[in-house]
Length: 352
Ligand code: TXA
Ligand code: MG
Image (cartoon, rainbow, N blue to C red; front, side):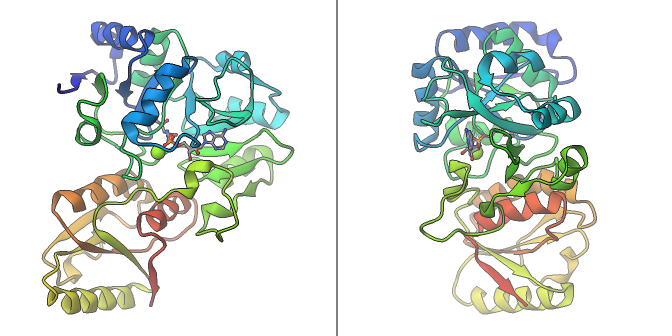
């Protein structure tokens, strides 16, 4: 049976109260509801119900050692779920919540091991998106939610992406339009002495350091780890964000990048392979490829971030087999863009 999709007014979710009554009843009965947030769509279940949470792993095809983020609708709910909130964590909470930053704390026993992927810590997020908060509040329970994609695919930034991946596997999708930021939340582990960035997002390292001083960055953020190394966020070890196409990043000065991409397009077109190029507004007219997908304005990293997963999904829609994409600077939001892009490319980067 097709999954039920309900459109809501994302500025005034209360006008669609009946949608949230239905969604809350699904959650309270152990079902799964996908909902919009300011980062990407989440696939929600009652975070305190291990049987409901197991359904998330099954629907996504997600490995059971990859913990879920628990979403709350009021700041103070945090204290009922976790132990030891440090002074630095309190500063971050006051400064950035509600917003796209997830924090990791020591968990209390009422968080089931199914939710925390067997860890003694738990990730907590207080989203800013009004629809997300209205939904969580209506459910009356914290909501465990990973991104609402099939495991390994790009995270969904539209209800149609969720439907494409999970139709008939989940009970309901709340359609609240396009996700504002388009990349998943920043994750920072505040359970130890020195806070450590595990996943970059739109709240950048510099923004965090302005509030609490120097932090560490997990090595997995920048590149591929050696076989005997483990990322601190278990999810960062899996291949991710990949369209079916082979993704190759070309990095260097603009002129060389364009030359190289045109050379590769010409060379590989002979092989009867459908080639695509992900270009920026600045470079779209410079490529010889027939399939150009424009990701946005190079000078506007927030626009690039918001469109990245959309563009990767478009490659599948166009049945592209190999796609070339220009690299971006790794500063600020660029750190998050390149982190997702490198994973989508399986770290396949050509420097020119
Ligand atoms: O923006 C977001 O964070 C979205 C929306 C729906 O809120 N959610 C999201 O969830 O991206 P997910 O499951 O796709 O990514 C969560 C990441 C995974 O890499 C997971 O391993 C890590 O967070 N994580 C969760 N709990 C953790 C913990 N206790 N310790 C370390 N990493 C944790
Ligand atoms: Mg995910």
